[in-house]
Image (cartoon, one colour):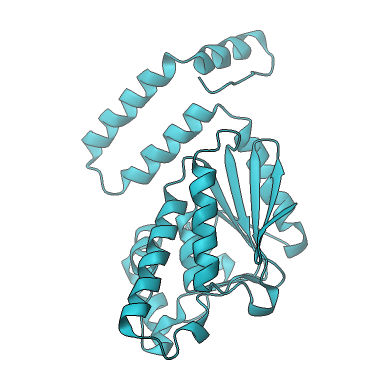
Length: 261
């Protein structure tokens, strides 16, 4: 493991990067400094072709329990806006990573923590995890995409109720809404996330990356336009060495060896 910041610890495995938010006493709350460090990390990760899958998790009872509210006190409106714009850039960087991303939500994922999880391609949750967008209780609203991404993922009425009440949401409820992919005992969560990441990393990387892009763009794309894009991507993939290898391996009844070209 490598400590890349006071509150960020990275573990590298074959074709995987696992990043842990290590601020246990604050339940992983996001200070401005931590958000900047996360953004710098993601900028480097984006161009690292050795990593096919990225796993983000927390420490102890907290995944990321939102922003560090103590940093809101006494700041100017301009400083508050600067922090929100920084968060938006970093969350967007996470969402747009070329790698497949998995949030392994081990505990509280509130406010910005829930919003970060929503930026990931898949969310696995511990049975003790608690999600929520409680900003309304401070006279505020989510500023990291909560009103937008949760609405797209779970529907208008569910998102409305979640935002205007600010209540905690259990993993089972979010699994029913299709937001959480799987629930595991807390002690098993990271192992299960890594197991899933390894399975995905073994797949042909060009196909996985293309699937991510197509699915991400599907929400705002007219159906016929999306179907045309899907066909074009499929035709491009058919011309790759990985597709030829996959077809040959299937016919030869052997394990394929994908190289990403």
